[in-house]
Image (cartoon, rainbow, N blue to C red; front, side, top):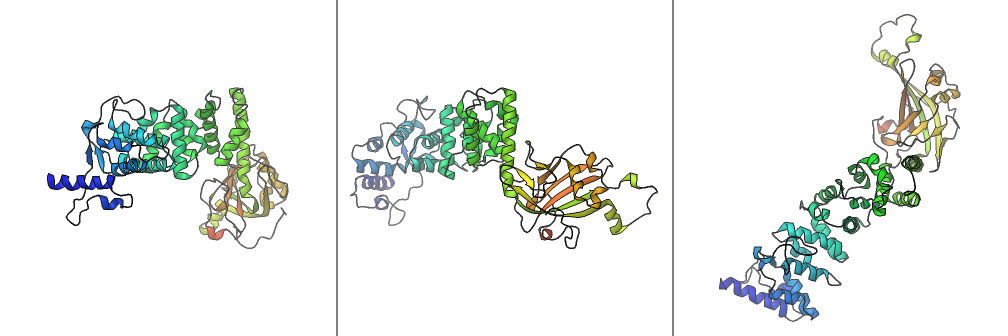
Length: 457
């Protein structure tokens, strides 16, 4: 009706043709003072609409005002056709949405009103495809606005990403990380894979509000069995993404991922499957060794033996109850204090024994020969058949910087060794959590009393 259309038309004329020093908010009608508040977008129903002449005007000020007014418009069902060439699927030649997106992205500085305009459109499917293009092709500010608009929006962009070329899929992921987190991730090369679930998964992560860490990419791509063959792929970007994902699975951060890519990039195409697996085992061991540098320092060693040695029972023991029964089932002995030397290239105990190594399948401190623990001449260890243990004893990271591992003895008893940090609680980088004693017990000998023997120093 005229009482509504008249003020709106006058307001838009003022917005576009007013003096440059007139504030934009003064140009449009308001809810107060007898004006009209806009509760819905103004219809933009044709490619012949005068707005398009303003958006592409040769006069910079007139063009600026046109883009400023765009945020008040909304495309109608009659505005588009079908089969749009280029960025935005679902429309034909002369489609208003395509014309707006192309006009905005064709300028050296993407107009700030483009993303708000797209976010308010009722046809979300086509608007989402356009937002993906703004992330890809817009300037830094517009690309960031579009990425923020998509993040946590619960929109559907999986088909839009799948339809992109491999280069654009990776570029989209790179830009999302760069615009929202400050830097791209090397693992985004996995977006180049034509088959698999990575592209759809990343799309769902973004619209759910997540920027997944590199290790999550690796798990989604199928873990080491699926990633290792991709290292030899002819697509270098995909291969580098696989190397980054493998490094992340081993706990490597972004800097280390780039380092490992540089280390493997020259040999990856000529390596055999077996040779690559062996080379990767060496790389993983190096990664774990580097991570163990954070674990260097003084530790209290505690041995825990659970169960009863049946060969020591010549006659059945009398019934025991309470604390005595508990002590019989679990005997704890403080072995002493030692220092773990770890410089990122190797690990050892300052005492020299037992010999330590790093496995290639997990983050752990490995005691290669558990029988070497007997070299310390501690009576409680002398009684145990540790020399008969053929498997290594791997100490795994726990909460509070504790390292814990166990083996089963020939007697059926369980021997457990703990390394408890002295006066600190700093786990190695990426250490998984696990149960251990309460933090308040960290600075006390586990078996009670002061540490009297110290054979390691």
